Amino acid sequence: MSELLPPTVHGYLDDLVTAEVYDPIVVELERRAEATGRPIPGRAVGRHLEVVLSSADIVEVAHLDAGFGALTYWLARAVGAQGVVHTIGTDPADAAIAEDVLRRAGTFARTRPVPADGRSILETLRAVADGAALGAVVGDVALDADTTDTTDTTHGPASLWQAAADRIRIGGLLVVLGVLRGADGTTPVPTHDHVVREVVNDPRFVTTIAPLRDGVLVARRIPDEDITLY
Image (tube, rainbow, N blue to C red):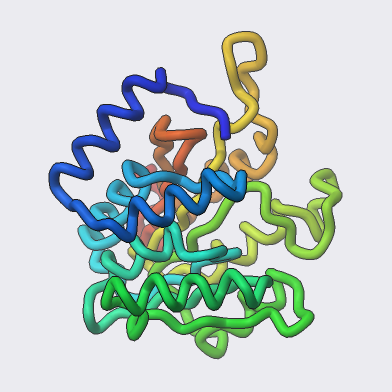
């Protein structure tokens, strides 16, 4: 995972989170990620999203490709005791690890695992909550709807995030991770610039990007009557 800020800055931000919220489970998740070579957003991003989602009173989230629970841990904290996080994953082994972790964290009851059962991520997302509007959809910018062809806007990542945007209620949030991935001192344009621009150019949303890890995009859906104000 690329990092836009110096490692010392990320370390400092992580330490601040630890000083406020120390939980051995977070350390366990980070060690698992390191041991398996699987990048995770990290505690600074997790805490950032917890505060952002809870501040917006988000109580229902769809978490795409939830993995073994590293980010779901923070999302479950964000929605509160009466909220729910629909965890969409494709690996039963990951789902089992996530369940164990979240049960020990005391937040598994806030999650609703949604197995893919052979469906694409896009198909699974459409089935979540019987198609009702969601408070937030969270996932990585590189996720494909059902293909690896990122130039195919019918089936690639752009189509997935277009579908996700359509599921967000007024006042809800679209959260896309990794949006600045690939951008550095010599290559200023992120790898998935086309996806970022799909969201930024959507008049239904107002958007901001934080340079945490490899970029965190948060877009809030506004009422139709407010579109002309932006």
